[in-house]
Image 1 (cartoon, rainbow, N blue to C red):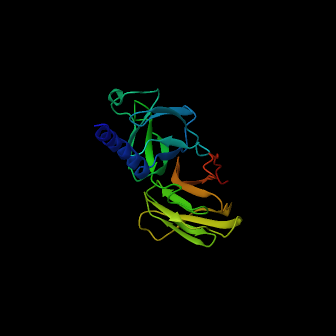
Image 2: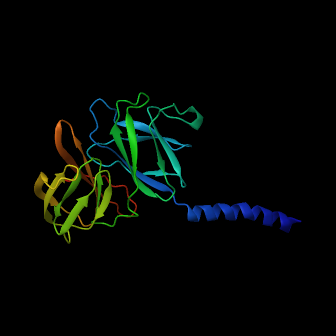
Image 3: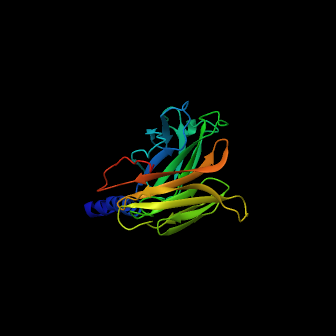
Length: 238
């Protein structure tokens, strides 16, 4: 009889071990791109079970936040929450697929949202998709952006993202020339012509987004350096 009881108790344990092995926890870094001065520097992120206060940096990536495995429904709130049934109607939400083990959470100002004036966007590419030295380009505009960065040619379609290889070998400066195109017109308009510093030990994420009162889009690049699972702060490329 004792042997039967032991066997029955083992099945749930094996099930838990199997789930832990096949389902990795999510990791997330937050960025409030172009955050207005009127917005708070922190908000609360609810994953359906746990509410955590998260930083909303505008000039760098946040620390790394760890979240439970499996698909998630994230909600951004102004105060902590412990019950999904209490989520206010219209609160900004975003879905994280189970496969997006590591992701960036982009926060944008949304004055039309009366619960919390933001919208949140899950960028499904992180350390699992990018190798050190590569760049993830995220185009948040309706413009096509292309150019030359070191040895790499860049083409980013409107409202899309693409991973670009290392623009130069090793850690060194490299020339950057970026242009944008309106709709399908052939004429290219300049964004910038400059030099950037490359860090071969760091991943980079570049955002192309609208500039207020200007047809020329803005470009901001942030470094995501991680070593031995330490949580390093990220600095934008000047």
